[in-house]
Image 1 (cartoon, rainbow, N blue to C red):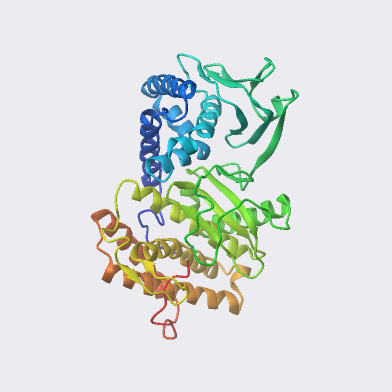
Image 2 (cartoon, one colour):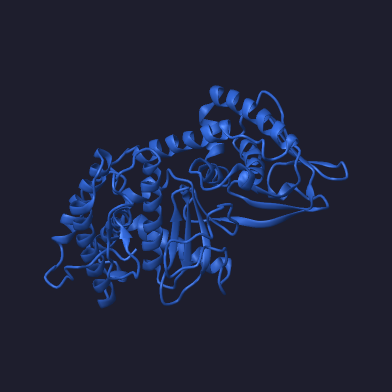
Length: 419
């Protein structure tokens, strides 16, 4: 297989733990938010429930930090917490469904709570990690979680223990939607038709209007087959990148079908959530998955280090987008597309059938040219922190090896990455 340099948060070396360390540290940021936010805008009953929950979870975190962080790392818990931590959403806007999701996650991770926690607010929906959603009509009256698991109390006084989606067969409760496992068993990768990201309908791309959940006119099996094919391309051509993916819980949210182009998105507050449109080309799907997971890695880092001191004060024009791009946007794009270029190079070296077309060669050249231009912008315009310099040095090292494998004489010298 074509040998490529390793690089921080891009192509890891064997046993590289950088991404796992970042995930843990950002989960600690979310846990701090969970243990310190005020419930006084939620009403007296909810405020009391928040304070009791915080006291019990704090004790559990001291006794078993790993299990509590696994529960906090569920997207339905961590994303609202990070939206609160960033100041983009208030507790009044997101805390109620977040606490309900926390109860389900604590039960799923079998956290040894030393006291039962009760949440006495109406709950219309419950998100079970890696499974899907339960809906309650009318909304459930209360939730209770303790060391034995999760229970729901209904308005008429009935109670039901919840182990998984299939265990709930009582009147008034039903399965809303399921999460679908993607790829081999060693991947913690799921396709979900539900989304608890409160920022999902806010869109930075000028040609896109939010990320509402939809399969388009396709069915779930078509989505799963396309994503399985994308994952297999990555596994074959980028085994080191695939190995790092195995350590990440990633949720893919479908946002439609686009036969002519591909649109995807990610959010700093949702580092484990990927928004993707379906496309008929497996290479395009593989590129998009790499692209957005890479965004998630850099987004994790930005919770701990600014990466660029002038991230959103230095701007550049783009030949492929109508809006100006901040230097952080250019770095995000290069960081996403350098491993895409590595995917192309490996597929070509393996003589994979997907690489034997003029379209593949054109795409490969387009991505490499954009990476060259993007790296030049970041290196000349960006005021990098030491950690940011580590990221860019690694990207540049890989890009130089990849660029030597092709004829660069016809590249557009003004190119920038497409994302």
